[in-house]
Length: 405
Length: 224
Image 1: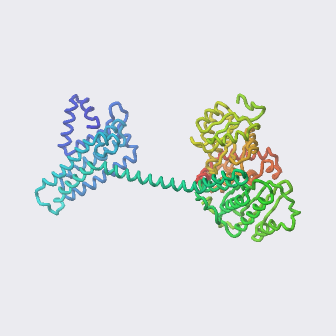
Image 2 (image 1 turned 180 degrees about the horizontal axis):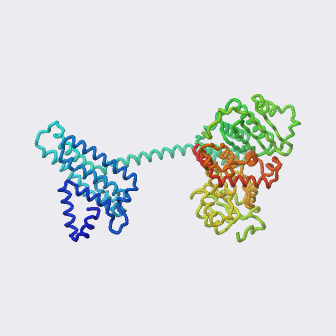
Image 3 (image 1 turned 60 degrees about the horizontal axis):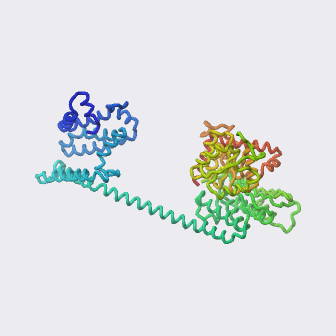
């Protein structure tokens, strides 16, 4: 037997191990399995020689194991309840020991020390054929078990000479026989089925991976590889190379960190942060300069804020056209009561008092646009010190977004 | 620090980045201004080599094949608390940046930074100050922005650590707008030293705050 209980008993009593084992087996058979149940319980409760605690004390902490054991026990209980309804007394007499044995074995299986688990796995291996060693070394055991189950099942079916009656008790035997037959076939062919199912799953996963790879490859090809090719061809023009690299970098970032597919950023924005990024994208693409964007907080865009962003775009374009700087900083912050955008460059600057009359851009499309909607624009600039345009628009509280939806 | 500032006052710099091309680029940009004493391309070799070299400043990539840059910071800080770290990254992912800062880095700059700016940033870190790029300033403002929900955060909320002062907010806003420390000082009529102390104080809060909001914020940013 498995638990090593026989050795322990023989050591106590002085009888030979084999005799103890035979006595135990006979007792198990004679007592309708009561002794087998007692064996399992003893296995749980008696510490192994040299061990400090029994499996049972460990099993107490194993909540999932207890749940599993309870589940198995209740399933069996239902099965025996059905059997007793069908008046199969020879089956119901086995009920209690079977339930105790099954629940006990579940707990032992989960909590036994490694060597005992190894032993049990070896015993159970031919049943399931799951582990690698089982596939090679135990086909014979499995085949024998399958043949025995099939034979017993056939025997139960055939030995019943009475004609099958459609009464509950009359059905017990054929049903038991069929169950045994099915069990035999399952033991014999189960590993094959399992392997086929596993192969199917593996194949599916491989196909999904291959599709993902193909998708990734096509996107990288459309974006990164195309850009790299362009950069190689235009290596003589550093301005354009920088521009290409920036545009590509932004697209790749949008894809990797924001989950936006390449090319999908273009179009209309619905939130403040997306809006300033759109400005960045357009100005960098059209004017070949770097726009550093920092956005704090976010909110949905309404007409007021669209006007604010339109003015901010104009200010950024102005900076790109006139300042002579390489970089424009664009900072947008959504506060509870207002949205602010700052456009700053370190270019040549100008004297705001002496703006020539033909430069309508700033006055009309920046200042006027925002002022009409209740916002304000401040321009700070001096020759040689760059320019900063501050735009501010008060806002209603109800369009606030949950932080990064 | 047995031989600090060996090269006539130049901070000694160590590079950690898995791209050889990027390392050689940085090396040539720093040449003449700073002494590059060593480089490594991954977490494990970096920890060993930094312990040997004992540089003043480590320029650390946030993303490394063998793990995040924060692993390097933690391991080195345990034995050599004097080594200072400046995170250098192409990553926009805020939670990576925040993780390295919280592990003990003194600042964060993006890889698109110009050579002279990088030199200035390294010097600033070497002298014990914090370096906030506009982007990091934006992250911090964002992370500290949400007013603490009165019910949830009361238990762990420490106003000293978990909230920015009005002045710190002003300084961060200006940095996020692209101002240099000098320009911030001029704008707010304070000295550059005061700006530096505000920024260092923000860094300290960022590193020590146990504010639930901070980690939650970073996690949310990751998901979007």
